Amino acid sequence: MKLNTTINGVAKILEISPDAYLVDVLRENGCLGVRQACDTGNCGVCTVHLDGRAVLSCVLLAVKAEGREITTIEGVPEAAVAIARCFVAEGADQCGYCTSGTVMNILYLEALVAQPTEAEIMHHLKGNLCRCTGYASQLRAIKAYFAAKAGREDLLPDEAAAKHLENTGATTADNVPGAARPISGEGKVAP
Image (cartoon, rainbow, N blue to C red; front, top):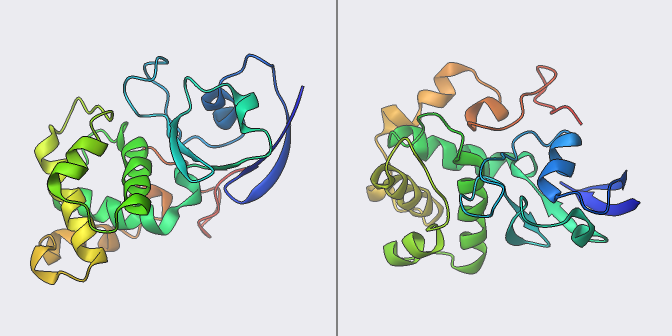
């Protein structure tokens, strides 16, 4: 069957199976930053936005995206890098497998609440599991991200740590663990 949808701002007509899950369709179409782990909607690594709302793509049939806008980590490079800088500065970036789903949930929270409290952050991200970092460093990183958005210089991470990414010369996708890698030096991601 045909699926008419928009992925990261690009209109697509895709041939899919009626029982295909969105995570599989996205990955088959080049959105490799969308991770797959539990396939039961319990870990959050597959989080994407559907019409601006965070959804778990491993339990959502792709047909539900008919006529709708899908945004993956590849579709939010500037915000993803800003959050990744905070993650690096706070040591919340170990294996990176969960990061793309966490970033997408942070961006959804930001759309709901411009300056969330610590309790709101913790409540909103309770469905994002991380086996590496523990959650204290992630919480510090997320708070630093929101502080930066508010211009709160006193709450930002150490300047030297925040510049770590700039000094590596890495591309946008390289700065976000789990994001697809560019196919050229121009930062373009493979379709």
